[in-house]
Image (tube, rainbow, N blue to C red; front, side):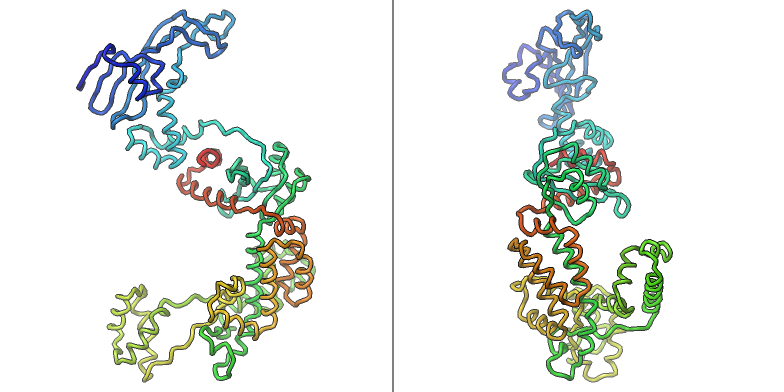
Length: 541
């Protein structure tokens, strides 16, 4: 239903151009305000047009027809343009295009049913929200487009022009976790991704480096494929190992060392003897059980792996024969005894669901409230999320004891010791300092481990790469096999590690882009083909 009709002679073209600058090259003939849209009838103001094939302008008209173009939304109303367009004869007789249709600059394009402004708005929405969510927002804004159309518009966007890169950041990301991985390349000067590669092997990255010469610094993690690609295809570039990855790798070896020496603490855990860990707020956990199916299976696998390795079988052959992962086989070979592996499994027990409420339960029990149902209602109101049977089974032994058993300290776990060793001393509380000092006094190996970790962290924070050789020598002098393995890895990537501990470059911006890629993948709900993901990563930042 037409609400109002205004003739073109009443429209001020200058004022209209202020509101609709993309309509500056057309003349409005008529405006029809309808219930859900506004229809502009218009024609091009130019007297001639340029041929898209040869570029020569022509004023010889072949025919005319009307063309409907959807435009942006104004005042909650959709704008629809009904353009009277002309078809021209090409003035160049040798041109392959005999006739052509005029296009309004800044407004229309060939075969498009939307104005350039509306198409740009949909592209921006699609880059930010992808298909389904983008289609919902576009519908709220009056721009009609389906989820598949939104993805198609993203794919049509041309790629940004490539620019020379001096400092390059490289890291991998999961296209399908555990199966397929890609590579993200970041310009460390601008922190913007410049390309995505569908693989993370040395050949793929090396080919890109050949096509983009001029890279002077390569920031990477400890991956061997990226090191080989930079060494083979960009030999003049300086390779820099990321400091966060160095510290992260050290943390994994610290955790293995603590697990292997946990028995040094539990063997002396006697509550009756003064000066032991049991007297401190977080005592050591009891010795793990050496029986059970898990312990039996670990001992059996440990014996199989060591027998095959003693017979000269390679790790790869052991993996095929026993059906184990390569990392599992290496872990079994590093453990001299199966009990070390059993200790590692047993010391990672998570706290019980009742632990936060035990103090309250003991106090209420001593006050005379021994009804389990009443206690259950109390701790439920305080935030307990476990079941009644869990509480009943825990309190059943208390019914035979008057008063209830004493409040025993929580067991000391591997992760607590590892966190104390890895944290900055200023971040530890007085109790943590006391516990760490007791642990170091109980086990000389853990004492030396804490010293090496502190020295490495100091070298990393203050960029003292010149001290790496002295640190490696000190580590090799101690009986710490897991730390020896870490030192061996540093020697294999020596130049990059020294640069990482000396230069200011870091891969923090690369890790941020990897997290952003994960977010973009989740937005597309499984429809994130590599080409679509690449466009969104490169264009939406």
